[in-house]
Image (cartoon, rainbow, N blue to C red; front, side, top):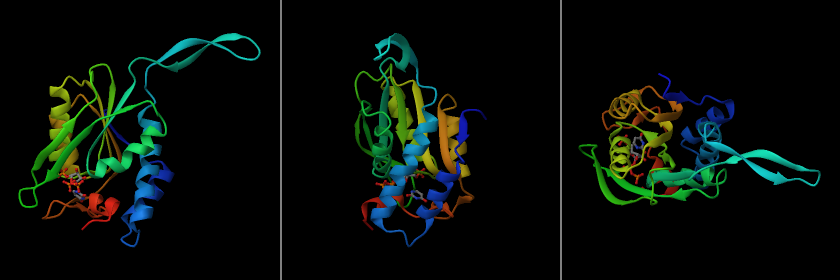
Length: 209
Ligand code: PRP
Ligand code: URA
């Protein structure tokens, strides 16, 4: 489906393999998440709107393209999505940043909301929602429900690893968004963790357990 894009660039795949390794420590894990987000952002933002503006070079005046309009909002799903924000801000430093706080119940695996704040107004912006992991899809669906309820329309969801189950759920609930994936893994296990996955992304980014 054309709204699902797997970014199978060799640099992204190499870095995802390093993330998966259980010997990769917090510092390196955090750096890799940021680097992958930057590489994914480079691809995912290739359709940002442009407009020609007049610029005076040392030689002459010319019309030349620059990003137009209200530009970008990056909205991480807390906590793990935070790790991807700086990678995208390094590409578009003027982007606004919102936050959606969700945690998964350990038993039901359903998301629980604890904090949400979006840049206002949000309607005109391209919104990039970040979360390294798309597992059951519950968190991503809830985050995008929230953004749409507040007027967001042009939404891109960016995850580093997805499970087929979560991708199907997100794509069915929000067929109008673009979904960017670093790698589509095999399946979920009985605890709704992605296999082979990389474990708990939030714990590995922040060094918690
Ligand atoms: C993880 C991950 C996603 C969610 C994915 O967050 O970062 O937000 O689980 O699972 P789902 O697709 O089944 O909803 P978690 O709830 O563990 O919170 P954390 O980022 O604070 O660790
Ligand atoms: N959240 C994670 O951090 N990892 C998984 O595999 C599933 C949900």
